Image (cartoon, rainbow over all chains, first blue to last red; front, side):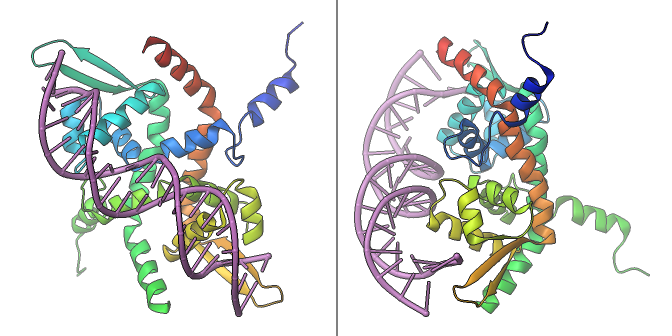
Length: 132
Length: 132
DNA sequence: CTGTATCCGTATAGATACTG
DNA sequence: CAGTATCTATACGGATACAG
């Protein structure tokens, strides 16, 4: 006899977390991943493993502080892996984990949405600003 | 003869905007939509038109200021429409536009990702924190 | 090269009070 | 009901300097 019925499993899988709730952990997670630098870092890493300096170049305008902070956060959450090669000078490579890959796909869509709908948004803004 | 060749159209559609660039408008747009309250507001409105008070209840913990600010921003960007019914008391309904609908789908995936992978992320954090 | 540490101005978010 | 206005705290992000 199973320790958990099919109904139990369904219930757990269906509503274990709800980001609409203020104190649900997934609310904080949503806040974390809803981030410009997270979106761009994951988008960049979707092209394969990259070094710190490569990321720094591709994410134009990112400060060392924000890049490191973002990468640490992603590493801690298990979305990317960090591999240090103790050469001189040291070399560090970042790579998407399987978990990170699953998020990256959505984030890439988000980045592309912004790029593809920029015109429509700007038109909407012009209309709104003209009326108000 | 068309004023624009197929190749021209492809090129324009492909790289008119690039969020990796620091001063590209789409970078700012990405920053705007990468927001907890935007994700939750769009997710809520995916169930159909809703009043201000309904949104306020569903997005548990949101302050009046943040809710109004978020809704204004979404309205200005053409993602939602705002309809005022001048009754007493006044009634205001918000609804996704077609443009908003296209973004909502992605944002809903983001919210669901957070809810569905919370366990894996927490496990990763525990592992990371234990090692560091 | 890949960070860490610190300072500092600004933007942001929350709380509160008030209004049509 | 659906906001606006104001105040305040603090978190965020950028710049700079330094280190392994």
